Amino acid sequence: MRYLSGPQWRARAQAHRERVRAWTGPHRERRRRGEPHPVWDFLFTYYSHRPALLERWAPGVGVTLGDAEEFADRPGYVRTGDGVRFDPSAAPERLRTTAGFVHRLLAATASRRPRLGCFGLHEWAMVYRTERPRHEVPLRLGAEGTDAVVESMPIGCTHYDAYRFFTDAAAPRNALRPTRDTQVELEQPGCLHATMDLYKWAYKLDPAVPSELVADCFALAADVRELDMRASPYDLAAHGFEPVRIETPDGRAAYARAQAGFAERAAPLRERLLGVCDALL
Image (cartoon, rainbow, N blue to C red; front, side, top):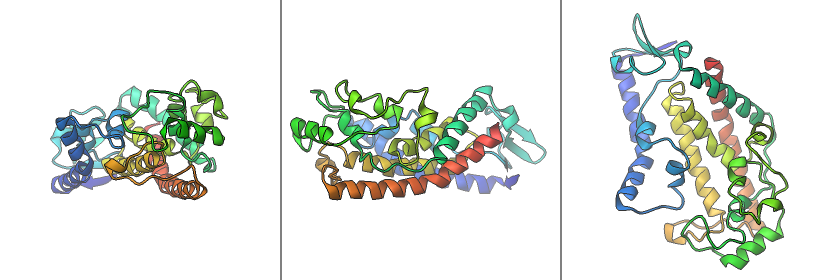
């Protein structure tokens, strides 16, 4: 159990807010202007954690806060002789239920070798043989060129929440049929979406997760999202993004290298989240 005095934890809370406002600030400004962004909006729309909640600081498990009466009425917090702390035994039952699932999923994911041969084709499969792409952004290769790329390579998406957005024509082309029930069975650490989802699991375990870890997961998700869309069929030059041309051997090699790097970055964050789950169970 660590102890943070009032000035200590308030300094940490301020540092956390300043860090995440690098993302939440521009998002709020774009929303105010009514300007959608095909890359960054995903982090605030697909993921349901509101910017205000991302900015709110929590110490996580194992920290007692001095001069922190404002925390006392939050679910799971208890008063102690020297302050206020989050107590897993006082947490809502739903949090322990969530921790049980997250622990099973992340432990299973960590036990597997990364698969690095998907080349981001999930985004291509989401626009295959459709006249209604998911974003109002032109396709780099046009509709016919995009379809030809999908038809030229095998698709091996392991992530249900990517696969469920495949077009009807693309779904049968996938080597697997991911479902919610098989998520724990199929998730693997090379998957970009599984890596981005570490952010989701971090905020789903709030307030047991220290906000610095939530921010670390968000920062990784933002970097992964950039690769995800640079390797997509969309032409994002107007938004300042150079494509990763996965339709070429060099592009596929670059994608796999970046994918491996993200898997390496994700591993310690996954382990830290598993430690939070252990504390809740």
